[in-house]
Length: 205
Image (cartoon, rainbow, N blue to C red):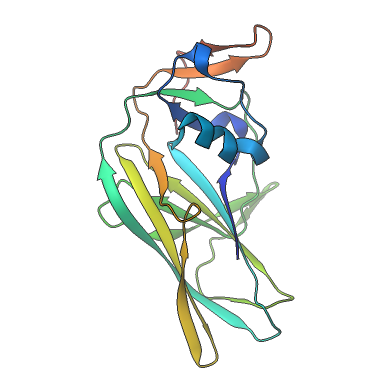
């Protein structure tokens, strides 16, 4: 399985909370460099964190994925830091097999989420899924936190014949972290002046 955290649905809907002054924050990274950028600055995804899970069998035998569970490690008040946007302007995404998690609740669940492919609505699809070496499956997770700062990870249940197990999904051995950012200052990066400018009209989703 390949775990791809720090994915962006759309640049304008991706923010990171930083305990730094705007003058101390480098320009936004390319999406593939987001994890290194965030780790170097101590940044925490704000509002929503998108994770892609690419699951594939190791042989021709089918593996049944039977469930995805959310485990909360800790929960506290949202971080009192400023939010920095990765870009301006919005677009649409494709999310044929997606799950939505509300981290604000006491017992978060991974709920099936409908997607959009062009003008066509893709219905929400729930477990189980079958995968094999030649038939992989990509699961996209959208985890939201608005009122709390949450450390969390996922567990994926699987079975194949008489064998079964659970795979922990986290950030290189550490829990993922997502924080609400309601009422925090929000900055956009201005390429003309090569600086971060405050945006009084933006809100973190």
